[in-house]
Image (tube, rainbow, N blue to C red; front, side):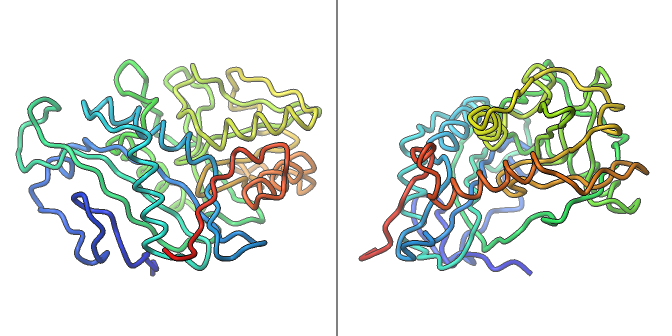
Length: 306
């Protein structure tokens, strides 16, 4: 049962969440012609009347870029302004997740992006841990990640997530928590909504942006933080067999944060995860505004008087 925040931004205004409803004939519902973002917010542990958002500028920029694939001109500044007002309107008191979404809002049956109305909404819900903090089990999915030549993978296009949905259900129904997708070349790509990292011999490896991955914001954050801590981070193609003999494997994303992998197929991974734990602690400290080196990544919204 989800606890949705009471107000949504819908058709240019703030309305009760229950009143933000779409027609069954909405174009994006039929063709996956939408794009979304996702970002967490938490009350400032040192100042509960202030909400902290992690890398809001990057989230707004990525959603604006995703909207361009849909022929929708939506500026990062507009997105940021709406999100700020959304937080102030809802006055959240605990950890929450926001979902801004751009979509073809016309009622029609022809698949197209030209001569069609677009719109933008935002809603949110209370959210704790998306995946188990103790670690997750993963299987290698039989489903393959799309290729950039057939899908705009640098956008968070809603239609792309049919593959993630198929892979996630396949994994859960076969006894695992999560799925790892390979790309069309058979190289490790990502999980169903998270990027993946491998630790071997003290170095950190992750698939590069040429491997048909989503250019994750948390992924970029992990890379920068790891390098600041003195780790060598290498972006390159990763083979499936590397996962099975890794010292550590972890997933990362806005919802998942930094989540260790404890099992891949029938291979158990070590419960000693010094690199993963160090990065998880650092990312948590940054999001809670306790890490001066990356203080600029935290956007602060004052709820007082809202």
